[in-house]
Image (cartoon, rainbow, N blue to C red; front, side):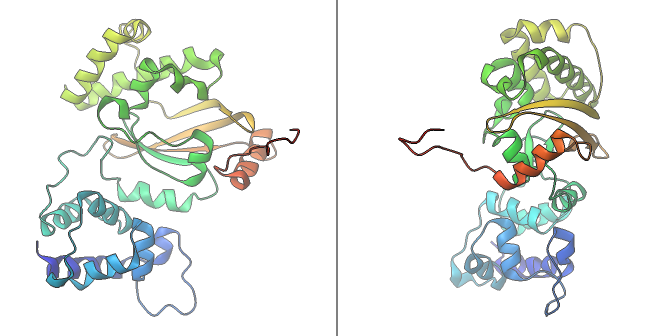
Length: 289
């Protein structure tokens, strides 16, 4: 592991990023051109001491960054694909093999938008509906995305194989979402051109879900760009929102954000959601609700 080169690379990437690029205030007393070490550590979910040792690049430190740590640093430092791969090479870790899947490298342009859209629920997903990153409001609205690999990482897969997945939407809306998911998957499968991952998932879904098989055989195709959703929240009830999609240039990733017209009940519920967050509202034992 080339720790000196790794440390130097991290320092140069940190110096080139402005605080506003990652949603941080610039501040009047900033002495460094880019981010501070503690800011990078916070964005990557690392301790300041650990990140400092990485930048120092001393062989005596004994630091051995995992692939997960390197991926978090790549996202925090807004590395492009070549830079991300270089980071993995310096750390002598296998470079993530694909540009898609639940462990995909989030495209920097989409990641930058996530930072800026802090007042609305935002999530970045793959074209197979695998969640890559989301903000706190998205987790509060939609719940935590399951930390899974393989087909189960895909919301489309879970939609047709796990009935619990559908509880986030009213039952009368399920048929609509099933049609949208399958039509969108048709487009993704064609765009990927016989990708093994997609082919296997489709084959399994056809065996496990008669509903999926019937919809797939209609050959309806429609890339989802905007949809009106009614989302069932455990504390706020049904929230009516518009969901917009911004697709990456290659179509393999997309940014979803949820909004409602100003003054609408949905807008008021979103505002309340930002206060409630993900806390569990429970009634102390022995007290009336």
